[in-house]
Image (tube, rainbow, N blue to C red; front, side):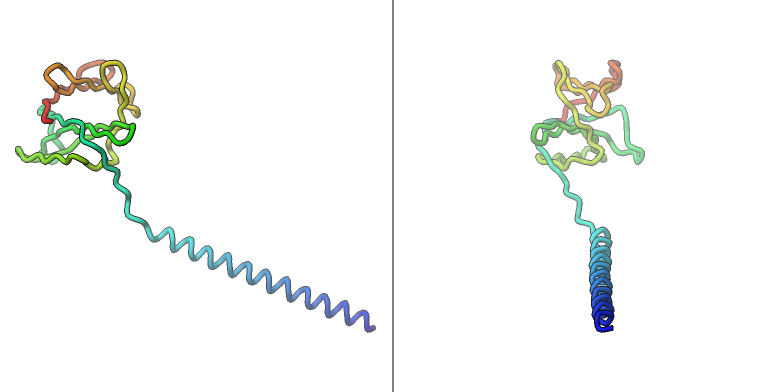
Length: 149
């Protein structure tokens, strides 16, 4: 009978330990889940990459949906080069020596005597002898943009 009590007591202690460990483990997981969900709610500000302005060209043929003038900036950042559209009104185009690279910027790479869009290989760019930016789509000239800088 005495050994039965010992087995019963040991079993009870073992069950208590298992329940305690499981409860602690569950509590830690719940706390971690709370921390993780709180972390996803809090967002860090977006890091805006900037680069060095290589050149700028005005596209006199088109305007934005809001009637603004369109220009293109070529920006280098490290070993990468980007082209991005910027808008302005009237004659008040203000260029930044270290412009932010917008999410809509297209990475371009050197190919032959011009550049090609990394995302859209059918889109090409060249600079003519007057310094104007020539934009090609599938090898067809679609725009000539006057050099600003």
